[in-house]
Image 1 (tube, rainbow, N blue to C red):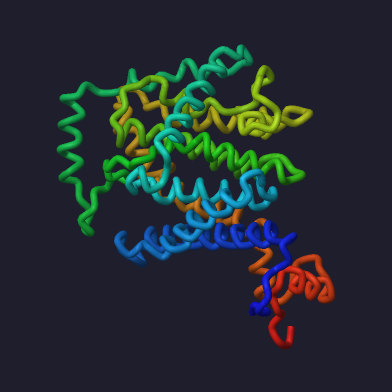
Image 2 (image 1 turned 90 degrees about the vertical axis):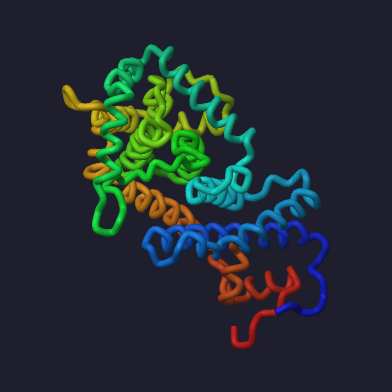
Length: 354
């Protein structure tokens, strides 16, 4: 409850950052809950709106914050939470109109980044030549054969009225391939805040993400480009990386490094395992093979579930926003006396009995 007086002017920036951090956390949580309800068929797509107001509040307050504090970069926690929110919007609202989720210039930058990444890996000369050898377009059936297969697929309907294919062939505004650089940057930012290296679980999630991105390009976007697998999988430790220290590219590269090269070796093994899974058996068309994978070992629904679990883990793996802690009357790592002093400093009265 407010005390009726304004917070001290010297705390104005702190209070604004507390509010922004709270709004970002709330919007991210609402987005993830919205998406989970939709995937669980607990709401219809048109009812997926619980996150709209929290997102609007973040947009409005962020504009005001940057206007009033143009030189302030924010705390490490709030910067990470904002990055998490941006990726969560991108992933959960991929089928929304692009103008509502992402600037076109940001999407173009992402595409340029992944193409540069693939080019850098092709020229690294560090045993990553397998990325050059994976040309899936040679497994694509001629158009007339594919047309016949698609007509058959359209007649292959489940009792619920849905096709047996996990992909519905409606192209999203933002492809999974476009989101990979953002996923890697988010993961690297989280890794930089931890004393440990990336885990086998994360590596398999990342490699699965890349497989799904490739499958989407060939099944949904009907791509004919042979560079697709290279752009999806060209992530790992590059000893010749010339990225500026502190940049996203630098942190991503550092994420795959450790002194005894255990991480780099494990990642290369897992990545190659997933790359090989994309190669169809002899005589099998690529798209038919990808559809079989999607119906079995590489289910799109399972993949989406694991990504949402990952994002929930990132959201709740940090300390709660300070204002959320203050709502409960106790701030982490602060004594009751110091908590009272904090309330007093920013002009908020503690609830009775706290």
